[in-house]
Length: 224
Image (spheres, helix red, strand yellow):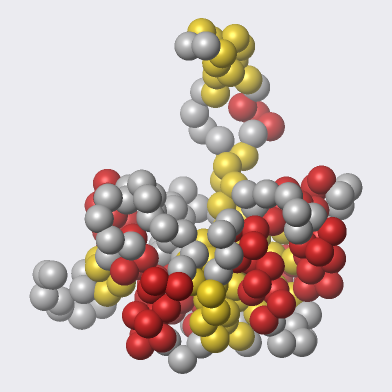
């Protein structure tokens, strides 16, 4: 049984500020390295990185994994990754900008997808959520049924590949949503509030705190 991980790295980091956020260093190591290394240490057989073409040279120097050009949207990038996967049975899809992901969550996701065929790592919503229109609060939404979506999301390969083929002309922001739209059941895997997605420079500071709690850096480092 072959398990493939697809790491999305095709964004332009437009909200980050300067440079590509995946190449930003934390404790002397690039964000994308933390992400990929977590999967290297987990029960994964193959890693495919779907990258922005502008950073492919840097990624090729870092990794020996398969690195392909992503698409103009996240959905297209993942589809490229699925087409590049070699005879896998299950696939995990993860944001390259989530470097605090742990081996424990990855391996738990693998175990659960083998039972359920379609799963998504999620955390229960803890904030009060308001619906707003034209600057005015319309209503308070019952948060007891609300969850925040994270990654990885994991699927039986044939199932998610079929969804991408059927919906390739649309623009979904997550793969679980594609299956939901086709009437398939998707189950949750408990995630972690530390499993943040880096979007802005301030997220780097938060990732530093969480990575340190996870045991990084393991050796003395020289600030860069």
